[in-house]
Image (cartoon, rainbow, N blue to C red; front, side):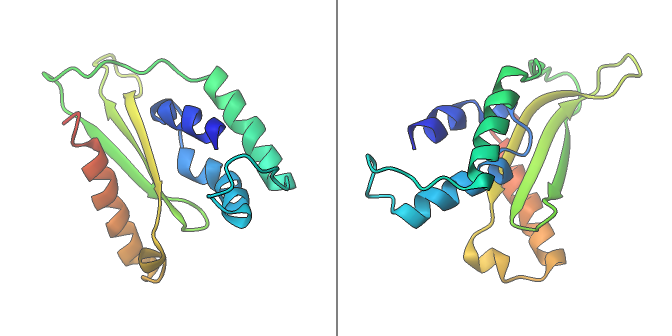
Length: 137
């Protein structure tokens, strides 16, 4: 759990963070969150997630500082399995290049949200990601 706490602090620099940590959170849920110092039963998916997150944190791109004189672009998507909402907040560079990322956001859908049809879940994802981005907008 300590690793997820430290990695979570830097989640703004890791694209699709919530879906990457899903297998690790699943392992913790299976063990029980009250058992902070017990040994986890590592799964292949959990080990892959752990290594991927470590790699992504080492390669994290430089995020641009927000420039409030420019427009913001919020790109939102639902993960392939439909369990997570992901977004990247960008700003145009003015050089014709791709917009520069300012922050990444992601979250797991709740059990209630997972029960919604995919089109409604996508709208919930837009709301959740917009709500997270509010601190910079």
